[in-house]
Image (cartoon, rainbow, N blue to C red; front, side, top):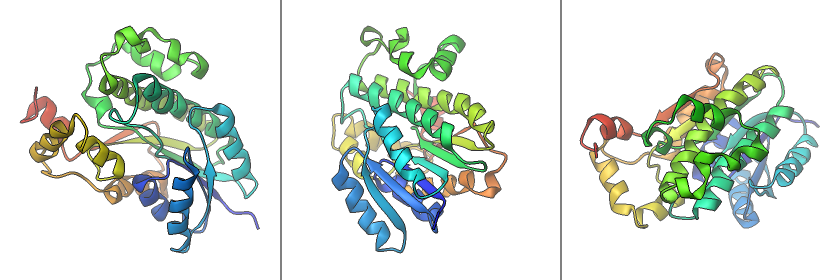
Length: 275
């Protein structure tokens, strides 16, 4: 029997929280670069009554993304995308961050946009980092939004001599995610589908623990101590926003980015976190 299909990339806590809210009754394809991660989280989901299938999927490979989507379509129409795949500044090099978080996300949104069903919805997880970097020019933002995916890493703004460090690369990638969502949402709209992004702050996940224990750990601990919320967030709080965006209640929302960071960005510009 054919089912509606959710494509979920990045087998982590945020993706799982969203999938538990929105994936009931659907076939859920769980893609991750490490198959063991996808299998482990699929077991948790299946033992809770969901219907998931783990797959090895490399976000940097268009072929790998297409293979996942082809497999997903064997079960039915793809009605939902949850993209929670990515690497952090403490986990990867500048080159890897740009290849995974920037290029890979752009390709995924493009490829899913070709097959998403009418009425379908998608969310991609960006980051507060895209909101805190130095403002880009209108031309640079448009380049990040609309440059053909196979040419995007050739942009001047993304060349090594113009990137300070891995955090700067991450900020650029996440700014690109937000702009790319706007441009792709227009194309998704031609199919009657919607696409949005969510920009979390410090959310307690294994990735965040890597950051807290990394070279910028004190910076991040100071951030959530001095932000208005006074604490880091949880994956379920991100899922609260995703549930609105992916449900009929969010039917008028597309091409938007939602900052959910406990007020850290506000404090960065206008409060105790101001540099």
